[in-house]
Image 1 (cartoon, one colour):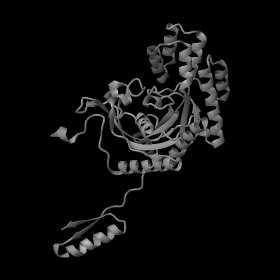
Image 2 (image 1 turned 90 degrees about the vertical axis):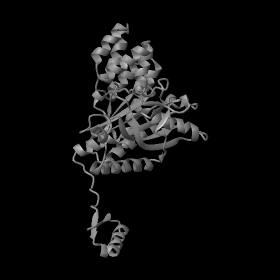
Image 3 (image 1 turned 60 degrees about the horizontal axis):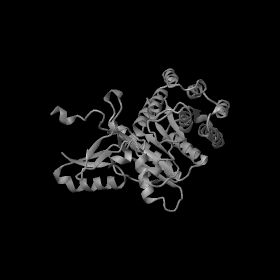
Image 4 (image 1 turned 90 degrees about the horizontal axis):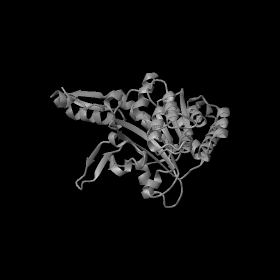
Length: 367
């Protein structure tokens, strides 16, 4: 009996003031998306396994919830919305060649290790700008992320930006194989630059290239970025840094540069990112409350090459951070309970109806 009233590990019930807060925050996020021209779309909770395969560069297979349909096809609960949005965009919206702006909200599922202390079911709201590969599109999404965070109530936060293309360009120059790149990505992601240096040395990577890769952990400004661009060993790495410089300049034009910091050591477990990548941090949250980046190769996996960039907001972490900052949602109106005797039932029903018509929650209870 005890097992019947408890949830499995990694999932939980949400109710009361926390649920009210989540709904309010989500409405503010989606309304901001709407102001930027994004239209909502709903995709299925489960998809074919191939939508999230290793070839596409999404969640590792071991972290997917997998099951079978009647025909024997492997299905998965979505761990991430972006591949689903890319699939649907190719199917429905790419005929006229115009940029497409889609937003979404729903649950995502990741079968992570319980020891990580993370939920296996999370609520996410996000937006995808498809068909625009310009720097202007990058900055428009960054500006929307910042405005969204301010609209939900945050005053102090940072959006760290990096460039996956720089890392990939250096890996190409170092002629690293896929296994080595994966290990290097893991080392840099956890800021273990000593371990990354030892691995690069063991792989015979030149000292100059090692230094460039490990400089990702430095605190960088515009001067340091220009130096990196000058030292870049190939066009991909050079163009990535020059694009990042242009993004920083444009964010200054927006008047939002105070929220931006540079972190070239920032990488993602999603290998489909190709350029700009970003994460938003604030006090009271153990992880990034918003993430995103450019994924110009993903739509090609579904049969239509097109540039794209997106962002996602993690409702669970956002609500935790708002609560830690003392930001509370206004309590819902208390339910007015009308008690009545059997002989007064008709009058009580009329009073309850009038209260509800005026917008006040009401319920009846026989004495």
